[in-house]
Amino acid sequence: MGNLKKSIFKLLLENRREAKEYQYTVPSPDSYPYQWLWDSCFHAIILTHLNIGDAKKEILSLLSKQFDNGLIPHMIYWDKESPTDFPVIEWGKADTSTITQPPMIAYAVWRIYQKDHDRSFLKEVYPRLYHFYRYLLTERDPHEKHLIGIMNPDESGEDNSPRFDIPLNLPPKHSFKENYQKRLNLVAQHIECKFDAPFCMRNFFWVKDVPINAIMVKNLMSLSGIAKKLGYLEDAEFFTKEAKNISLAMKKLMLENDLFWSTFGESYQKIKAKTWAIFAPLFAKILTQKGAKKLVEEHLLNPQEFWTKYPIPTVSLDESSFDPKGFWRGPVWIAINWFIYKGLLNYGFKDVADTIKKSSISLLEKSGFREYFNPLTGEGLGAKNFTWGGLVLDMR
Image 1 (cartoon, rainbow, N blue to C red):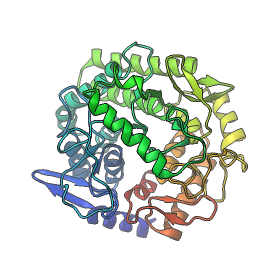
Image 2 (image 1 turned 60 degrees about the vertical axis):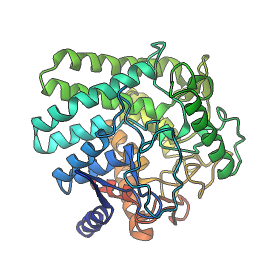
Image 3 (image 1 turned 120 degrees about the vertical axis):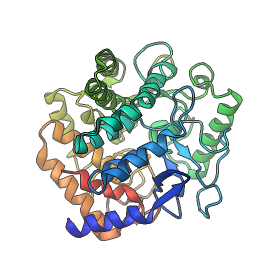
Image 4 (image 1 turned 90 degrees about the horizontal axis):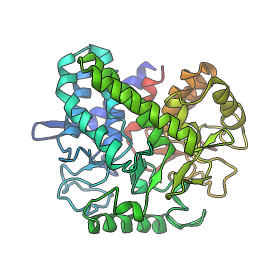
C-alpha cells in the first residue's frame, strides 16, 4: 500500500490546478479538465490521508461558486480554454453548470474535521453547507414528501445509468449518443424553465433516486454533527430529524420485496432496474441488520448478479441493459466500491468489504488509474490518470 499511496499522491499533485486564490483537482487532465462537485468531495476525502490543508482548499474552491439560492453547481469551468476531449456544454451560466450532484460535501467536511479538529474551518464553511442542504430540502422536495428529486440524470453522477432509461423513454439497449442527446434536451429545457427545478423541470424529468437520498441521509447526519460541534443545537436537531424523515420516506415509497428502487412521477412509479443503487442504503445504515444480511447474501454475493471476477459491477449481470464496457451500464467504478465498502462495514460484513478493497487495489495494479473497469476481465476503460482510484486509501 506504501507504493500505491505514493502513486496516488503523485497523481493528485499532477491533476492539481490553481485559479486566482483557489486550488482544485481535475479528475483527469485530458478527459475531465474542470472541477466537479462529488469528484472534489472524493478528492478531499483522499487528501485527508495525504495533506489536510489541500483537502480544505478543495472544499473552499467548490463553495466559491455557490448560487444565491444555495445550490452548489456540479461543474465549475475555471478555464474553458483547456485543451480537452470533454465538450463544453452551455448550461445557461458563464462559468458553471446550473445543476448539482450527489451532496457529499458535508460528509467530506466532517471527515476533514475528524482529522485535525479545526473548528475555525467548520465555522467558515458551515453557512454555505447550511444553505446548500436547505436548498435540497425545499427546492427539491416542494411538496414535503421527504424525498429529494433530481431533474437530470447527470445530477446523480451516473449519467447514462439504466435507472434513467424509463424516465427518458429509452429502451434497455441504446447508444450513448442517443442517451446524451436526451440529457442535452433536458439542459435546454432547464434554461427555458429559467432554472426553476420544483415547478417547471419536474414536468420533464423528476426522479427520486435511491443513491441521492441515501447520500443525503448520511450527509445530513454529518451536517448535524458539524452544527452540534459549533453549538448550533437547534440546527443539529433539525438536520437529524430531516435525515430520519428521508429514511422513513424511502422505506414507505421506494421499498418493495426488500429492495429499494428509484421512483419517478407523482405516483412514485418504481424503476426496477437492478443497479448498484440497491446497496446505497447500506451507506446510510437505513436497512435493518436482517435486511442488510439478506441483501448481501442474495444479491451482492450472487455470481449471477453482482459478484463478478472483479466486483462490483454498476449493473446486475442479469439485466438486459448490462454492458461490461458501457460507462455506467456495467463497469466497476472505484467510488461505487467505496460506498459499498463503507456500507458493509456499517453492518459488520468486514470480510466481504475486505474482498472489495483487495479487488479495487488489484484493478489499479492491473490496469492503472482508469475511470472504470470491465468487471469480467479487469480491463481499464475510459479516462486515464483518473483520480477516483485514490479512494482505496480510505478503505480502512
